[in-house]
Image 1 (tube, one colour):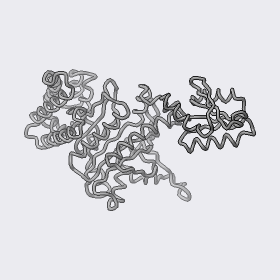
Image 2 (cartoon, helix red, strand yellow):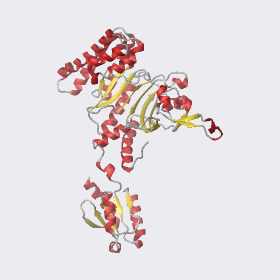
Image 3 (cartoon, helix red, strand yellow):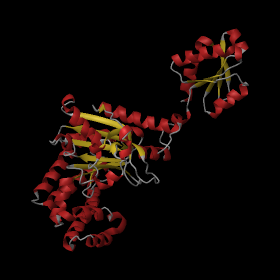
Image 4 (cartoon, helix red, strand yellow):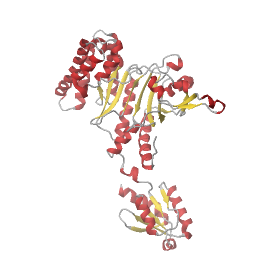
Length: 456
């Protein structure tokens, strides 16, 4: 668990502010849930490993001696959402679009980039089976990243049914689906021979493993063909490649009904994504296989070129809410990796330069004990005019006050000395240029506003 110093907090608030602004323009509403849930709400929802990572809260008062837990800190934001739907469904819209940005807790071993307390940033649409939902969520997440300054990113898209159809068509038995996908995920690192060896070691029949690898190997040749067909237009290339992959997918799954339905739904998502204006950002990737036991339809992940890992992911999960309601509720969601986004933006210096350094627009100095009330009055006038004002808290040598403002990178210092007071003026010192000028008291706000605009 971490402390966040002022600069860290400003970065987080900046990113969260962009996310909220975009999501609300897409019609999503804010939701907040308690940090604590009843332990039975969380147990059994994340598998055995997840159960072990819950921060459990012991019973209190007269029950303390039992050593039993009845509450736990929330592990994620999705299960609380499902509980809210079950509890308040009759008070919520037919199509509930919510975003939620709150901390979650996991009793994990601390490691680099792994924390016991971290923020999740979720957006979900519940109540509709339409593929438009997936396209809307992808468009909203894409706009968030674009507004934050990310350019070279892609939204990888696959479908659980399509992937299951591929595995079945290749001849991989159902009980070996998960282990086959784990091995395939290592293709880029260990190559075809390495994956073949791992498939054999995991008990996947050699003939089925070979068919599977042949299929994924063929997909790489489609990329070259699409590049030739589209020339130098990356948008046309992506569209041509997606069409070729969908065609090859449908051909490979053949008469497998489950696989064919998955491909049809991928086509529908792509059609809506084109209408949303993000067709060139969406990349059909039949190898994407995140959380298959959790998702029931489309699965998505956002990747940035030359950046390992992802900046977020999600998909359709139509069964989770049913665990609380007793009836399935269609749902699709996406989680942006808030912590990772902030780290990458900091490393790449993507934040506005003044965001971290500009703690105040102006500092009002204290000339002497007799001028304190005058300085307070000026500070309040400037705050009322919309400026962020730091009031130096005590009478001190002016040089020390200037040094303090400079150390905090405050661009202007206002001084009301005896002579300035007598003339009805205020001296404004520009800490960046060192220039100092006298301004009529009534014109201080206008002068500072003009000077600030000139520096931008």
